[in-house]
Length: 304
Ligand SMILES: O=C(O)c1cc(C(=O)O)oc(=O)c1
Image (cartoon, rainbow, N blue to C red; front, side, top):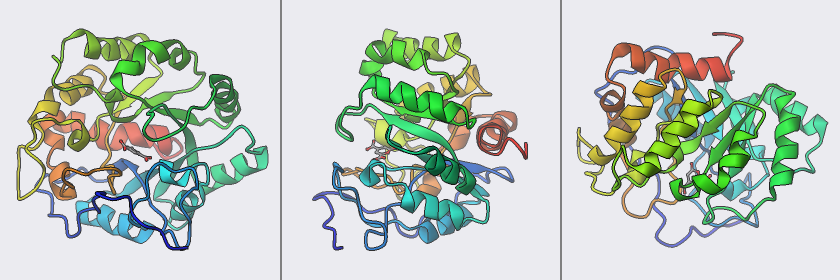
């Protein structure tokens, strides 16, 4: 099948720079995706965008280039609940990738077990309206209860303004809960203002909640973008991510978000995104927890 990219959609950055920051041995890129290729793994009919292809080979080449050892491949919404591209990436990773799937209530126990055997360790619930249609909460709770028996966790993606409304649902989930991209704070608001305080409270009061301190390129308003060797990219996001890393050092994860779905302003150089890490995790100990200890505990507990 031939797919036409959504107009204005930027392709991932070809030929990223070599990071100046050397990530610790055994580091995990804990949030990235594969797109298709569409000819092999067609995009879902219900998708809200059509991406460029971004294959497992390209993902693993980036992993090696940036100095990472492993990946967590998160099901992208353009594939809906058809997890074949993601599972195929896991199966061809030599055990170096684990995954997060999207499933419907109709998924069978045998399908869940097959995904587990391939390396899936979580499901993603998405509440970002521009990306997905609404799924009823009773369906999500039913899924959460089923996957908890496999020892999986739930990854949630939402925007900061929606946290109050989703609070009761999130806090009722029976598993570890991992928040994508810090719950998308509005970084023009103060880091100690009511909106971000609510997110901090969410994590403080619920020790099962973790956060990915990823996606400064999406959250930043002032930049400067991670392009042309910029070593001080996305300064306005630093106080938010640094606060979460320092307050909850054992419950944070980091990922590139490659191939960066839905960026229309600029596409970051992934090497420079890695150079962002020491601005938010400022000691070797925090960096090791963020990049090695925490993702290993969540995704490869048998090895950590
Ligand atoms: O903000 C986004 O557009 C976005 C989209 C997806 C996806 O389509 O799965 O995943 C992400 O992590 C972020």
